[in-house]
Length: 249
Ligand SMILES: Nc1ncnc2c1ncn2[C@@H]1O[C@H](COP(=O)(O)OP(=O)(O)OP(=O)(O)O)[C@@H](O)[C@H]1O
Ligand SMILES: [Mg+2]
Image 1 (cartoon, rainbow, N blue to C red):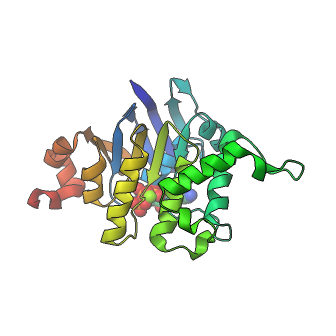
Image 2: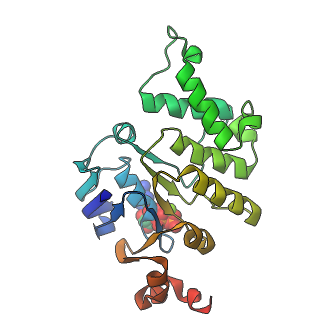
Image 3: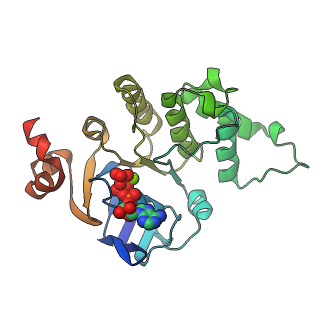
């Protein structure tokens, strides 16, 4: 069963077509990587699916519901969480406050002086759980901007997962990481997404091949191929467009 589908999805910026008739199918429970050269439209695809942009044409179907044009917060409450290519945590807030904000936003609770949100046990418990799972508990009172780069990226993943989504979309979670940090990030993602469907944009092919059940290759805003890693590696069009170097591996 597909948890997410895009149907002939199109998007343009100032008359320039960035996504062209994209038909993506994400099966419930799989980890699905989206790869492709810089500027292929990967992040734009995430932005259109998650409600940051309304597509120029086509549909987004999530859990059998047409969510095309829905606002991002509404889509999030339907069970879709996402992380950003550029870390989007709040630097001046602590790790705890960042995660708590994500938990609160899923529950649709706004900050309100007349409510003692700190006393809301379930929000606090969930926040603590997420921080412990991220191995960020010790740093919970550290402002996000003071964390190491690797930990900031972990926090970014945690923000997406704090909404306890059924579908989690990660945009280059390992970008700019050292080999050690990447290794930690991959283990973290595996541990935290066992029960979930994951769509991950990633340039690091080691990360892609260690996580993905299936891979979609996007090139110039069009899907070039979808398949299991073995099929993608063997696909001549993919090799020509993007993965030529994989022939040597
Ligand atoms: N907000 C925007 N306004 C105008 N053009 C944009 C905007 N966002 C992206 N683009 C353009 O759309 C195209 C696709 O960009 P996108 O960021 O989706 O690519 P990407 O596949 O995520 O690339 P990367 O691997 O570098 O992150 C690029 O040509 C980019 O310059
Ligand atoms: Mg991108």
